[in-house]
Image 1 (spheres, rainbow, N blue to C red):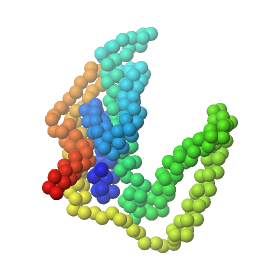
Image 2: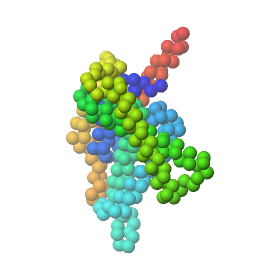
Image 3: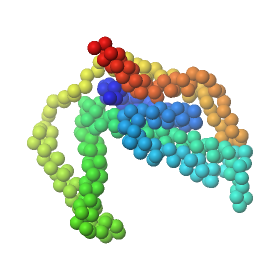
Image 4: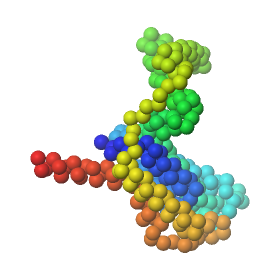
Length: 284
């Protein structure tokens, strides 16, 4: 069981925002590697072994692809690896591309975890009070996307079951036309059901989530680590220089430790709950 998802949706949302924001803004190999490792470890807990392996198989190849792509088209750095048709390919461009690839791979995994931990109803619970119409529209749109993907797969399977060919532009257009028709019909039925349940007029807002003391403690801990990471970023810790010779400035032990503490917080909560549960069971 994933215990972190049991926190208030606002706590979970702020955690993902903070982690993805630092990962994208810092974009240095140390922070991105820690972020990627933490997301990979937690994904086995949240998504299961098969789901995590599928996400990793999609995310990890981004790292070498970004590194090679940047080396091929980036013309900076002093450490020449080789030359081709007079164009130099440098270690600095390769390292910069690898750092970008680590950032993208980490963000891919964090977004997958966000979708699993914060479904549309939790997103609605956080922002429904401030912008109910906008949140309802976004929730419906996010719900229709996986539904459309599933419907498209069912249409293709039905076409194969009837013995009809599924390849080619003509058959794809037929499936797309059927998908659009089914989606429009479902949207009309959803609108009628919402009107029947009173979405047209004034309504009371109900949320099953309550902000408890554990949520407050987790929120304070997350904000403190995020603020510390921002301060370290502004002070220039782990500043990688890719123009000229590859250089790393202002290294310290606090930066990766505090960053790992923030990224591994959900997994630590899950492990702590498992240990507490085993201890309670042993006393029965």
